[in-house]
Length: 254
Ligand SMILES: NC(=O)c1ccc[n+]([C@@H]2O[C@H](COP(=O)([O-])OP(=O)(O)OC[C@H]3O[C@@H](n4cnc5c(N)ncnc54)[C@H](O)[C@@H]3O)[C@@H](O)[C@H]2O)c1
Image (tube, rainbow, N blue to C red; front, side):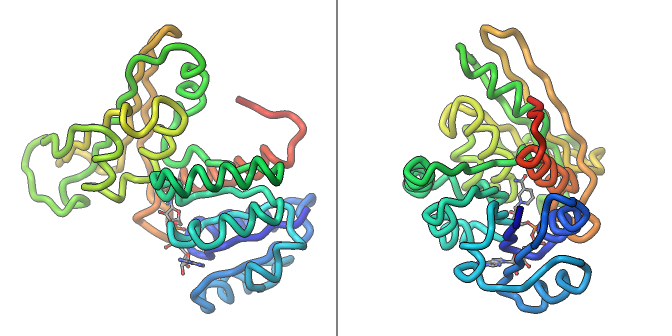
């Protein structure tokens, strides 16, 4: 199997290094708008080549987008039109209903898949399963240190309460988690989000609360930052690598 990676930053690097150690993967094609980023990553890998996306598309089986929302808009249609599976990390791009529906249509037509890793949260599997029957309420509570929100509160303060669509307009850094949760469950307009600034918090914590016919779900994650990009949670990289194993392994978990 050959892999394409668009975006050689923190997550792209983690995915590429993991892929480099997987025997089933023969060649890893790298592309980044910043040539230094792709060259730096290339020098750390055994089986990588640097190529523009349109030149590697015929040779790959799966493409990772680990770049930006702009990259999803530019490259996702091309990847799917080529009939290749796509793993999207910049899930926030899918808040754009037109883009998301267009990608779904192209993927259906070309019989390929769009994978969305669970990212920096856990419990997405439970929300997705619960959504098969009535799922009454889904709430995401994100707690950060006030400094990481550019604030200076000396006590716990709720800075946003509303639906996911409005949350990402005001707090775009929460966008990937809110998008993944919304798409797994009740959608952008019904998924509720609370963003809390708490001086006690040293990590970024995400708590998912849901109830429905299945019962009640509480899932909480306290994230360590990615060593290569403190703005990314390390778990986001691990969830991307887990999707790669899911594609390769015969046994599918979850
Ligand atoms: N799903 C999640 O839970 C989750 C979590 C963290 C980050 N993300 C998203 O994943 C993406 C990558 O995150 P990261 O921490 O690796 O970022 P990063 O800034 O470390 O790396 C991004 C890389 O992509 C490159 N890039 C940007 N736009 C590009 C384009 N149009 N074409 C080609 N290359 C391009 C940049 O030059 C950079 O090298 C971001 O969009 C981020 O928001 C998702």
